[in-house]
Length: 256
Image 1 (cartoon, rainbow, N blue to C red):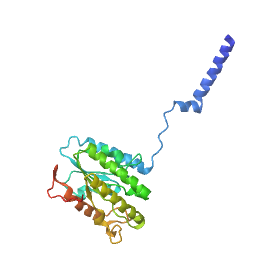
Image 2: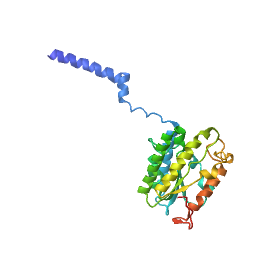
Image 3: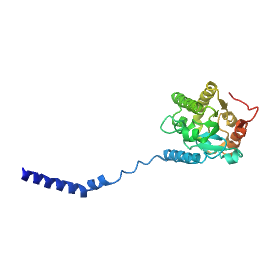
Image 4: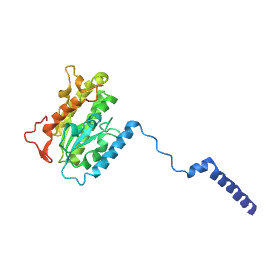
């Protein structure tokens, strides 16, 4: 038995040292491989959310409450200092963002985009990118259902916040096919506003031409907006903004 034991020990030593100095053995000692690289717009989403979190950390010392613009690339392109100077506005738009039926989207980032921002008012515009993925009737229902969940979550977790639902805007040129679905989704958003006693702001009516498309002076490629469009948008929001931080203007019109 002693000879057998010695031979086994010798063989085990050979296996051990062969593994230790083999490529497999070295790999076992290395750190875990890097995570799979995320798609461009997914990475941008997480980078933008990280920026929100960093900005929010600096809000703890600020007095007063903030106005939140919440949405996708159209919202991200809204430069508040240019179009609505004098207001405490936080832009929480993210290029290519969705309502939130997947792992990302507005519903998935309400904490850094709204709840951690000390908000008084939230202006929400979202949904066009979801329709770009699928503009079927079934998809419109799913988008509207998720949109309703966004509104309910904000209402339940931030009951003192004024929540405004902005219509999705018309499109033109290569995006013109989305217009029927956009009109249908806007009808759903208007109904959500009525059901939850929220204010619906019809920006679509301000930017649509006689053909039912986005006016040519408001876009270059049919989807994103020119400064002229943002000026119209800003003017439409002004009646709903606080005249001073924490105080609403009197005689505020309503589209409920």
